Length: 236
Image (cartoon, rainbow, N blue to C red; front, side):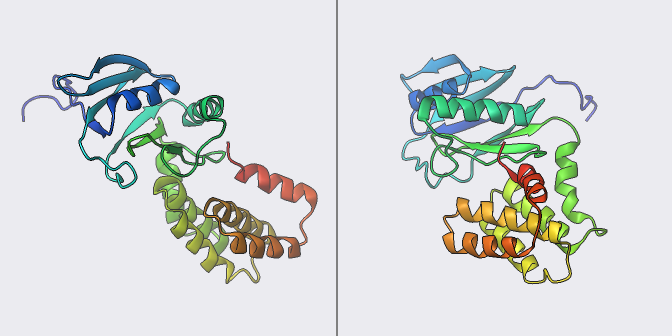
C-alpha cells in the first residue's frame, strides 16, 4: 500500500448496540456528554460527544443488556482517574450511589490505576484509559521475575481485576498466594489480604472477608502501617 499509514483519509465509526436510543442518550448525558444527533424514526440512532470523542448508538431489537458482554470500545483520555472521580460524583448526584454491580455499573478504580470500565444501560463495556505508557507498564508488572511471591500475586490479581474485570480469578490468585504466606513480609501479606478483603466485599463473600480480617489482625502491624496500606488500596 503506497499511502502513508499516518494519513487519516478514512474514518471508522463503530456503532454500539442499545435497547433504546433515548435511554442510551439520557444515560451518557448524565455523565456529561452532549447529544449531537438523535433520530427515533424510521429507525433509532443517536450520537453523544465529549472531549472531541463521539459514541454512536444504534437500536438492536431483542438486545438483552444483561447478557451483552461482547460489545464496547476504548476511550483514551488524559487522566482516567480524574474522569473516574467525575463519573462517580455524577452517579452519586443522580442515583444516590456509585453502582459497582448490575447494569449500569462502573468498575472500582484504585490509586495508581490507569483505567476503568463503565458498563452502560445497554451492557456496552466502555473502557477509559489514561494516555501514555503507564497503562502498558501496569499490565507488564505481572511479568517481572524479580519480585516476591506476594507482590507477584498482587500484580497478577490486579491484571484480572483492572484489565479483565474478573474478580473471581483475582481472588483465586490471592488465595493461592496466601496459602504460602509463611516467611513472607508481613507488610506484603497485609497488602494481599486487604485486596482480598476488597474483592470479598465486591463478591458478597462474607466468609472470605472474615477469614482475611482474622489473619490480618494476627500480623501485628502498627496502626500507621495499616493506614498506609489502606490508603494504597482504597477506591478513588
